[in-house]
Length: 151
Image (tube, rainbow, N blue to C red; front, top):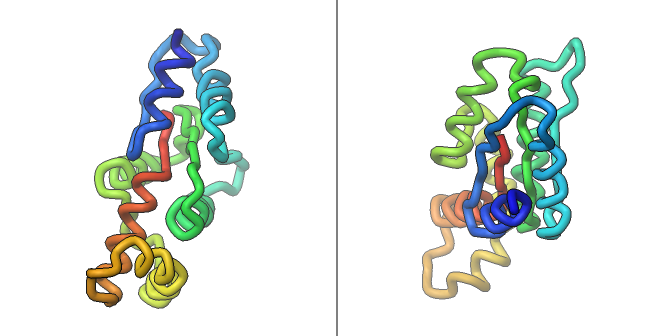
């Protein structure tokens, strides 16, 4: 019953879920299983002693490339145990709200990603002007459609 609800949620475009329950009740396992049955790539950060904001940014960059540039469906599983600093919550909030995390990419990296989605942009939007702003908006829409967060 719960698996089907999670599955239905993450199969929708821009669908994310917040799983609430007693510790050890299987929230993480259900999220992984739902991602697998939906055909998504399931990702969860691995906390180490040296894991910090830069490490999270590196992991998020990889997810952005997988979901935004390659167009693959990704389920990002993030638990309360993985919150090493308050900044992590701010990054998750902006990821869920707008899809953008401030300071994640330098301008040249953003432009390179826009160049990588150019062919898909032209195929999907033949009537739109081909400029960096439109391509970046296309990239962000694609990212938000394909990146699903399970908290």
